[in-house]
Length: 129
Length: 129
Image (cartoon, rainbow over all chains, first blue to last red; front, top):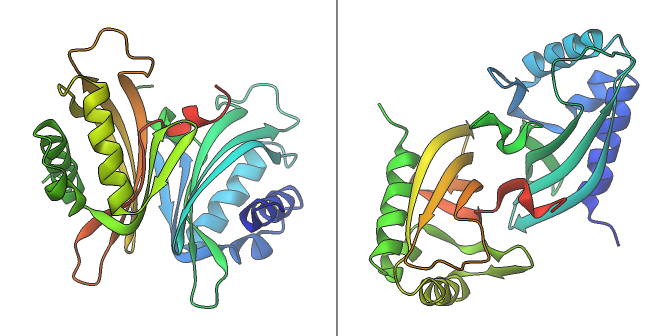
């Protein structure tokens, strides 16, 4: 059976593709952090939603993320997801990599739902670039 | 001021160098996971301690880890540390990389102490190797 986090991340990718950012925000903790780009980090659902709207516009409203190989390191209510994240978009001149090795930290809330607490699609490329 | 996690990781590196694994275990959660090598993951303090003893032996009891560039993404009681980890040892033929981009997940316990929950020195190299 696939890990439930794989299904959740798939739902997030669908929400991003459909630009359904209200649904997307259901998968984040209230104080989640998103690495928008290597030198720009935002915190909290409202700012994350605003960032996703800007990201969608940057990619000409055609962004479609998907995940390839994925490893989930889980302990208790915390999981580190290491995932090959492929971004597809009708934009030829993006200055950001379209194929990334991402790191996502998910936490289980009191009702047992996994929520994204740290969303860093740039993975370890944040250092020594 | 340096982030306190930087100091804690420095203490862990010292404990590994001194092979003081009882002190080292004070910095892990009870159910922490350690990626010993890409195809070997152990869980829990006892198994992590045993793994560190084996790692020390593998490196001819001369292993000295240190950290270079480090980025800490923190939210609430959870932090993702992305760190350039340099391993120095009197061993010329290690089959594992001696310079890594590591990912560590730390959690604050109820008394506010940071403990390592997920120790993956291989970072995103776990996928697409």
